[in-house]
Image 1 (cartoon, helix red, strand yellow):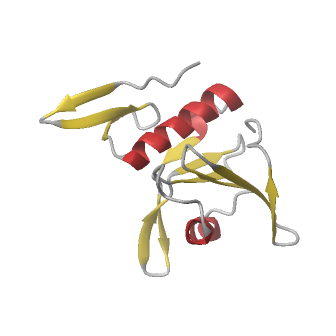
Image 2 (cartoon, one colour):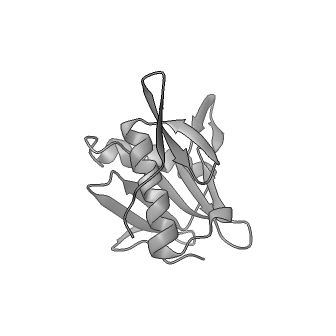
Length: 141
């Protein structure tokens, strides 16, 4: 299945349809990657749309932030946290530190950095507080 999102143009600005938020969102390089990741999680890993939260707000210390993609398990617990970056943004230590800030608020067992070109995935063991790099995103909970 190919990623072919619904894109419209209004007043010379492109918008992409977000199937989770059910509205058009301004198409930026990062939004393209976010929508592609959502598509892959749904089509390749069988994640149900109802378990997603996109750009969920959180407060860390005094700062307001937004997670890119947060997926819950069927018990309503945070399961998978994804930080998306535009294709030209490396998945480096800075990106991982940003992901860890979000993980402090939403302690999911799985963490993902994704920029469409590269993907990095970790399993978090809450008993040992260790992050182990893994090769593939888990199937839907």
